[in-house]
Image (tube, rainbow, N blue to C red; front, side):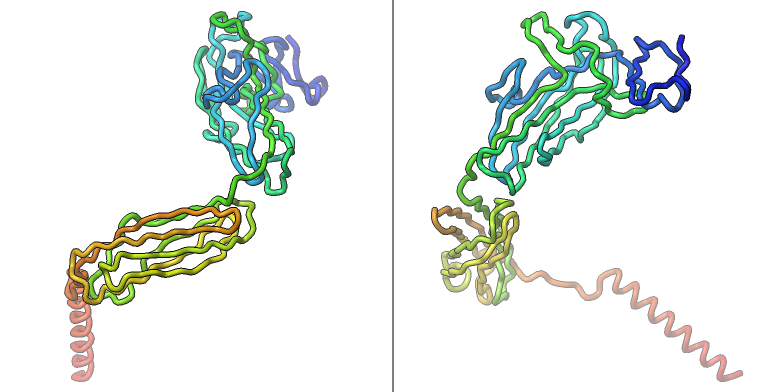
Length: 334
């Protein structure tokens, strides 16, 4: 049995306890990998999303500058029936993804998530790829997903390699690798991403002469410049005079701006209903969206003056005032 000490530990060498058969010290500790299980990708890019895929082989997707796509994969500890034999025990595995050009990648669960898996078990791993705003039509990124070992120091470590790569599933005779590649190509962005955020119902107290009913107009394209959004808000005239408000607002990419329809509910009977309809549109090519918001007039909310907390505070104040008064009288008699 070899002794790995400060003299004979090879810097950068990945030590495998099954094959190297050595005692190790702290210098080599983090590089120790246990090949108990066999990492693989049971489901690669596009498979679980119902999209065209290759097994094995690279897969393909498109997005636009600032756009995002999400794919679900299946990191896997190869089943005991998969070939070749060996490395079919419980092991701690993890998942990571890397972008060739540094595009933004996020995972759910988070990358480097570690899971103890028995042979034949996997988990669902979502990967979201976001292209930068600086990307141009035709640009392409290569994203590699990997199911890898966790080394003895508890770190997700692709340098540990793989006990078998590829594995063969006897049921279909296909090769399954521990890594899969997705090529993402930039295409033309869709028309302006316009969105409206609103409540479905707004309660207005009777007596309000200026009831502001809010709508949010959103420019959902993170990479778009500040864009003019025209809008028109109409009501049916059941609460105050009928509205027919037209205006515009400049909305930067990825942000929202508030606009309002203002109703006069000063003399409107309780339980009256009205609807506000907003239409929002942008320039050429014209893109529009519309939403409807209901308004319900309710009785003014009463605010009780002498609530339990108020009464408690008043009593304490009276007690303190009385105590101060009695103390002053005692001092003056002395």
